[in-house]
Image 1 (cartoon, rainbow, N blue to C red):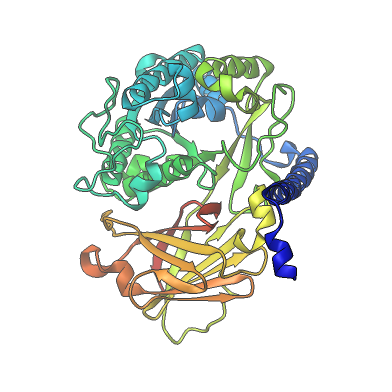
Image 2: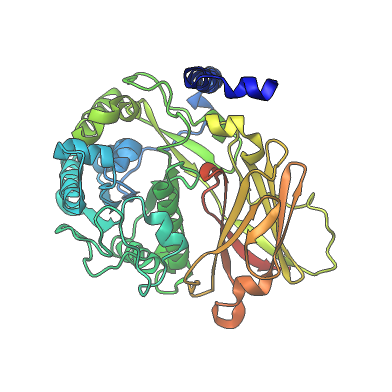
Length: 491
């Protein structure tokens, strides 16, 4: 009787039930999101920038600013650029991509919903001209800006999957495997990790900066996290090169943040307010410092941001929020990866983490605590690399946990692709042969044969590991640690 009654329900009633269910789910996520952002804004309001050391005003230094996209250099470092130039220093800016993969902005600029490669290339030219205008307003001569022309939204693919020139990446926007732009630093460079790293090293050698800035490794934007990895690795290789060691060892590296959760808060024009780091990033492996800006410098930065109309038309409130009474810079040091004998104990208690990740700083991470990365520990014991990745809440087989490892030899050699270990449904789905994984309480433990890490390196020996962790659910990324560098040390 019950089944027959169910079959008599009209399509209209079924439609109503579906609408009601959808609305209930929407109300739940809206309420959860509203509660999360209210809590974060309350915590942010209590955070004081004065608890962080102030950076001395740069004096007659050589400063190099790397920007993943045209405008990041102004958002993160306009005050640093102004003060360096004012005090007799020299600044050089490098735009790694032209930011041409912003489809909504390209459609608006082309006044068409049907855009193709030509439209993306044309839009890149616009963004280059906006950068020149913004930097010129800060006093930077045009000849002190370099445009690399690497693929927007493709830098993480260059780092992970397309390292050698023989395997170039093809842009999904311009359909090119090398820069199609007239204004390009080296038009011979291919869209691959090796060429991007070489271009960064060349620009650093030519300029020999005292200070280098680039986006933070934990920035939510994949291009920003990847740019951080490339610049960090380039400087590491120069410090190890006898021809460059003298100057490169004195070069300081600092990171600026653009994207993390809903930071900065509050959005909009708040020129008299200070900028504090995201609350969740104050107890991680980032050591923050602040550069104070005078009111006139804040006004100059605000005007420079306005010289990016292709961006401000779509997200002015977010962009103008970076014009505050200070700028923030973080230091993130590399960690040691110890090679221990097989007889070493199983305890992790005597080892510091190789990364500490922010928690509960995004609504997805807040709702999915079993995929919210908290920490990662690493060691080599006997013939195996062992990782213990900690999470805010108990882990679950419904999430996918993935580790990417790019090993480097002493002279910089590295495999064509990063080594990937992917754990889903409680089993290892993709990994070197002989790898194992275990889901335990609030951690995922992964074990990989050390020989498989080093097999493609000269002499079968790794000097550095670049390690990154990310989590996802149904193909949607929940958290990503960004790349941390581990220097291999024998006991």
